Amino acid sequence: MDMPMVVMRLLHILLGVFWAGTLIFMAFFLEPSIRAAMPESGKVMQQLQRRRLMTVMPVVALLTILSGVGLMWRISGGMDPAWFRSSAGRALSYGAGAALLAFVIGVAVMRPAQLKAFALAQQLAQAGGPAPEARQTELAALRRRATVSMRWVAALLVVAVAAMAIARYV
Image (cartoon, rainbow, N blue to C red; front, side, top):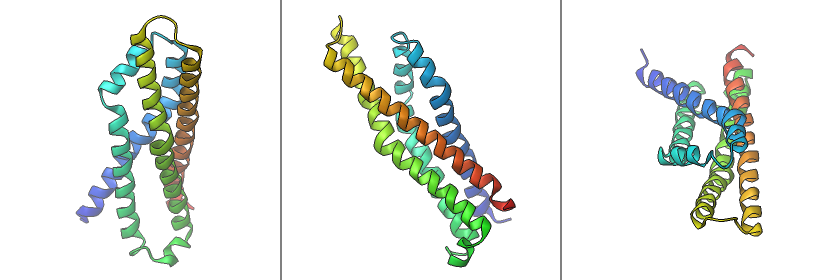
């Protein structure tokens, strides 16, 4: 039994399921529900923040990517260019590219927008009374940016999962 391969594959699949499943659920079910339940949904966001979702997700994504790179190294014979020209090599490369792009968008756009929106919403709630128009506009823009980027990340992860699921059969 090739134990390093088993461990990398197990990590890659379990962490990838968590990463993709969480983002797909958030983008298409949780976020619209939270938006519809405003302002009461602030408590849900506080609990997600308290449970460190915004810290856990990038770590899970990075470990998924690193285990995927390890797997790709092993199955490609040390990143042999000939392997990448095969159908399976291309499919896995497209999936890996989609996952990498999802990670970059998630870390560079989605996460900062979510954290800023959460902090601003907390400030406004603590201030009490109606929020100034400019702050409401800023909060709406941050939420929109977080939502759009989250949907892109979720879509890219669907592409990554699909490419990896069919790679051996193309």
